[in-house]
Amino acid sequence: MVAFTAGTTTSVSTWNSGVLIFNRVISNIGNGYNLHTGVFTVPIAGTYVFYVSAVEYQRQNLVVDIVLNSVSKVRTIGENGAPYQTGTNMVVLNLQKGDSVWVRHSQGNGYYSHNVPITTFSGFMI
Image (tube, rainbow, N blue to C red; front, side, top):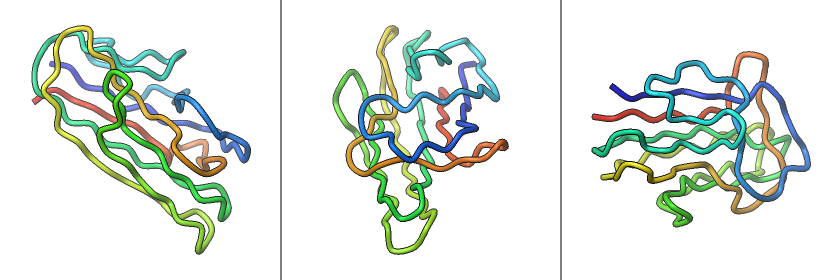
């Protein structure tokens, strides 16, 4: 079995590029998620489901992608019409051992979370 859930326990108003690193690992069965890089590396080939929930920081708009080996697969949008709007999305991918999946900034500034994470990234093998 391979599965993980990671979340961030901080809010950042200026994040505007790169990988979203989730600093709290809730579960990491199979040790595929790297706490330091924010990247999940596939330990066993198979079909996986990934889910992201990203909360925009106080009306700053936030767009993030779930990325496979540098190619965006799905996108979330937290619109700036009201504070703390949440974007979510899920994708099913057939993966090979060694493939990499992560959450990448696309547009906007910042993300919001709490000491109990509300901006999260999860994946599991089916």
